[in-house]
Length: 161
Image (cartoon, rainbow, N blue to C red; front, side):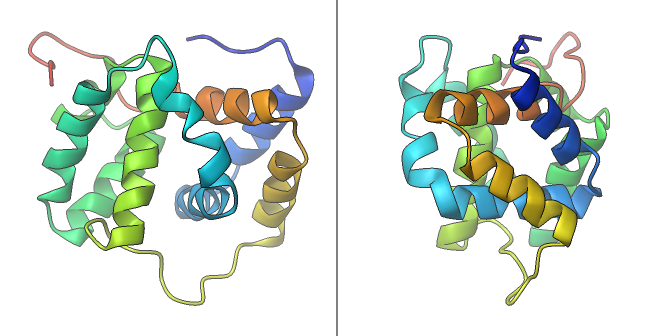
């Protein structure tokens, strides 16, 4: 997995990963809401992104029940070994970021399980959100990519999307 030598980014990713699973999901959502318009258009333009692959996985997940959609996201963070987390694990880091962006867009449009109304981030998660907001644009992209990169499961034969 490609990780940065930027110590600030590394520390923020570790702080992000130290949160509980549902808190990580909530934090990702808040980052998307705060900065999705600036962070995410850059990701699809990257040379290693495979929009069709990301869209293929997203389309399979959006057909599932809200509970199954939530479980898929939890499984990614927990590195559970499922058919879908293996598909995710076979993707490039930039394509993984696009999958999360599409999940956030789906939450926005209601095709993916939405955040509970009036959800409040914990003080630890708020601190990470403020740190991410304080980064330069390239550092924000690197932070999010390094965060989503280790998620999922190792691909096995037959895990193609």
